Image 1: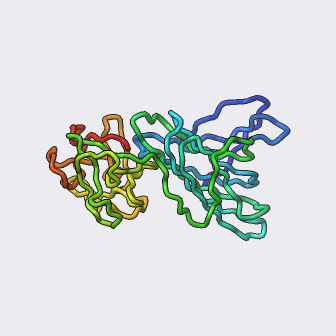
Image 2: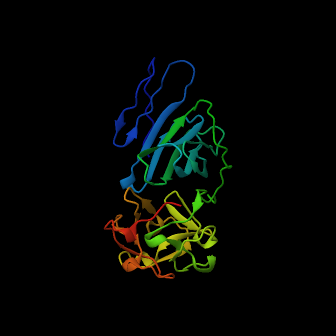
Image 3: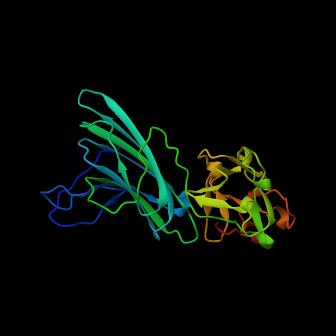
Amino acid sequence: MRSFRRIAAATAVGCLLAGGTVAGLTLSSGTAKAEEVTRCEVFPDAGGKCTLDATEPTPGSLELEATSSPSGVESMVTWTNICTSSSGASATTTGSQDGAATLYIPVTNGLSNPASCEVTATVQMDINSSFVVGFLILDDNPATTTTTPTPSPTATATALPTGVTGPIKGYDNKCVDDPKNSSANRTKVEIWTCSSGDKAEQWRYTAGQLMHNGLCLDDKGNAGTGGKVILFTCNGTSGEQWNHVLNNTFQVKAHSFTDCLDDPAYSKTNGTQLMLYTCHNTSNQHWSIP
């Protein structure tokens, strides 16, 4: 954890980038104002994910802000706040929220008058063809903002991402398909002729995950090139994190983004199981976003 740094100033000032974080700046003296404490930056080539952490010796109201360029990028934010009292007692609160950036997310303190709080927060953003950059920002004493309604923080984050649902179209007008619209772990994921309204072809791409029926598209056994893809319980591993990049390929985070979702041998046969193969920007590796 790194400590907050506050800089008093009589007028609004810019933010100083240092090692990927931004020092907190007080915009005016006198009445308490919102202070940007720290931030992390999201880049497409970093998997659409970043984590910030900070220790606040005198915490006020804490708020996270997830913002993107362009705005409206689907994002998932999770946070943990460990507060300690002057007597040494501690309390931990956690929470999560997903939705279209910009998101404003209050961070609750588990103690009424903590002596200090340590905040760790992570954002996963949907890396699509228009994504440029994103930020996760921690503010202290935030000004009143128009916020997206947020769920109450819980000890365990259980909320699922809520992105747009639709087909993933690929080579020869074939779609990514879940046979018989299954909800079972290890179900093979295949190609099938695209059919409007077919529930087996409805996917949700958000926070880097490709989801169907509550399960995630998964690199089976973390096999990489030549391995098959299946449905599996979402667990946040690198074999379930996908980037949709400018050439319309889905790159899996595992194996350093070198493997792409692939229609084997340019197959046009319904029922062919999809696989991972070294990214080479060919038409059998081009897929639309749901």
